[in-house]
Image (cartoon, rainbow, N blue to C red; front, side, top):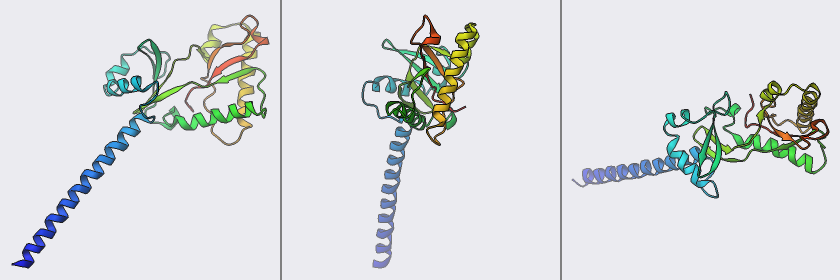
Length: 214
């Protein structure tokens, strides 16, 4: 009688240990899932907007109901007087879901400027602030400006347009000179103005690069 009882006790203990392992694995999965949805922990000045959007973006109709700010999957969102941008990346690295890699490229350019390895003559490059990621959505600061293509459509002064084109070519050359990091998309960069709006050809163009590759 002792052997069956011992065998049964061992079996029950094994089942109990297995169930504890299952619970532990599930808790770890939940933790990783939450971390993956958020990318940046909910702390700092943007934790409220990220927490709010984490609930709202679970419903696809919320994003679809927001006003578009481009022909792409980018919408504008107002929260407590703050204007933010939400971009649907579809989980694709070429559309910015791994925004940290694009950020590294931008920082490499900025470091080269600070150390005088490159000296931009026709432009100033700035970075769009990323608040965080919620699932496949990037949540960013809103930048007032125009897409490069839209700018050319609306401004017909050939001399100014030529100067702007030269600035984009200079920026591309400077990125290429800094190594093998993939260059973010240049064709959809945001033109946010010029340091000399009265005579743009004598100033520098203010650019923001999108968190995008294609």
